[in-house]
Length: 351
Ligand code: UFG
Image (cartoon, rainbow, N blue to C red; front, side):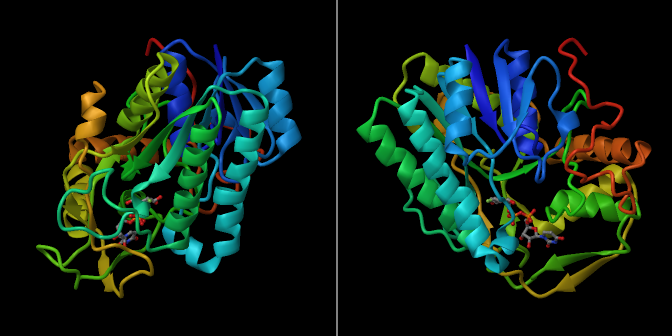
């Protein structure tokens, strides 16, 4: 059975493609390469460059390849960006998901896995479970929640089962060094801190130290991208095995403050770097940490759930990018049609 992975040339999609291939699936990636990389789609996966919101294209790809399962990653994903570009976020994350669903229904796709987010929740001092009422605080979170609602309604109306995976803060890189977070304009905490440690940035800022948390810094649940990728393989096999549709949190149920994360980055890299305090960033929640009981009850067993392991793998990838000359002054990093890959970025199941 071949699965279609939209956004499979991106960070989380790319790692999931590796996990799917490792598990013996056949994979077709549909990606417009707006933020993804051609090199991150390894053989034997096949890349089709195109838009997940192109109804005719998706129908044709599904029909031609007899696809019965779609994993939908293609999205805009940066919380603060969504305040500057709400229309772009609603178009990409909500409208194009509606089109993808229309294609899936018309071609009788049986299973859909959807990349959702902890940003659908409001801030919470206790662990958030999937049953907690969604109350997104950013256009990004709202756009993802709209897509969730559509998927649930479509699932109820047609013969399509879905798995909605709500990711907490995804970080780290493939432990075998085949892929990692490669965007040139990163905003995510661990990558920003590592870039600062490596001198790619003169210093970094911490946004807000007056949150109602134990040390005043915002708290998040950081999940290793490889553990998350494996959660997708598990979710897909549940659906393919006939399980009911589900919504599930993807996190470790352990929160770290921004300050604690920066300290771990300094400890792992053994590099001190300048950190400045800055005002709160729009849309940032004080605290959001997963109740992950449901995912664990599916049989998910995380392998990389130490923050220092997440940071170490991310650091190894940053060093790889630096070795491959993908430093900030190199335009090749984020060139949509770049064919160069970092040295480690190839598919090798037996490494
Ligand atoms: N932060 C800093 N300085 C930085 C970058 C981040 O202080 O340079 C802080 C943020 O203010 C926030 C925390 O670090 O408090 C985490 O920020 P990230 O940008 O790494 O991640 P977000 O929590 O904003 O968002 C991420 C994903 C979303 C997802 C969310 C779920 O980008 O897609 O996690 O919690 F919805």
